[in-house]
Length: 329
Image (cartoon, rainbow, N blue to C red; front, top):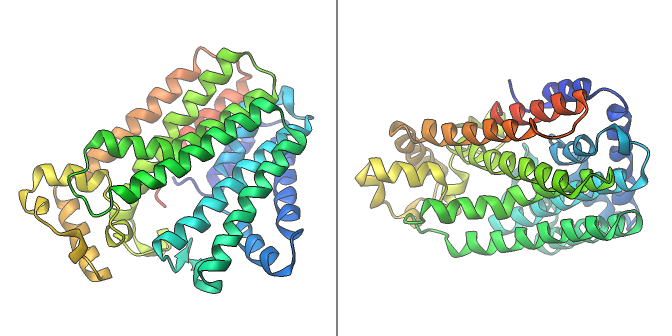
């Protein structure tokens, strides 16, 4: 199973109620927000949003809210805002990484150049906060603001750690938390806040989102080493080529002394990155990294047990966690 469209459809069916209609409204709102800012930026922002993805973050907003918040305008605004933030970070990441492809299609950077890509990402960021400020609460804006600050901090840490194979696991996990998990956490918090849930439940759902967010990033890094290009839309070892040290390499270095001596700056071609991926995989590091991620997912599921959730809401949140664990691309 993957976390692709079929899985998301299954999650939506499990949730029942208004979730399919709410997701459709989020999609319509995203299109409208991208289209309203001049033809050039609208084209690239619209293409970025249309490229889609799993929409896990807006789905988490809706599921964390549950049926009691279905009619509230701040719910759609929050779900659209987190997806706009996610899209903005992808556009900016592609600029920083010089990435030509994203999900198998040319990136904004590849099509329009650095300046246009930066402007597109900035537009998406600004639209996210404008949308949430228009309809949401102060608590929701604060939650999303904390997440976006964490994204920037995580990116700075990743740049500081570039090309350094001696990055400790704790530092790597902090990067995962900042760059990925905090937006998952905020997605759940925004939904719970829209439902006016008690503070304890807001925090508990945020912790659930954070846990599956870290697992998501761990598995993303496994896929970068193991995943075939026809599924991932990019060559194996993309992270290695831009100097990003992830858990598979950190674990592999502990098992293969020869890897500790590898100069990552010397990995300059796709073929060299593929060869290094093969060496990492041969150590068993991918299986260990995956096991860590799966343990996080199971613990996240256990944490839902004590919460006051509707049956369909609980099933759907569990399925989101399962889809993260089962992802292949």
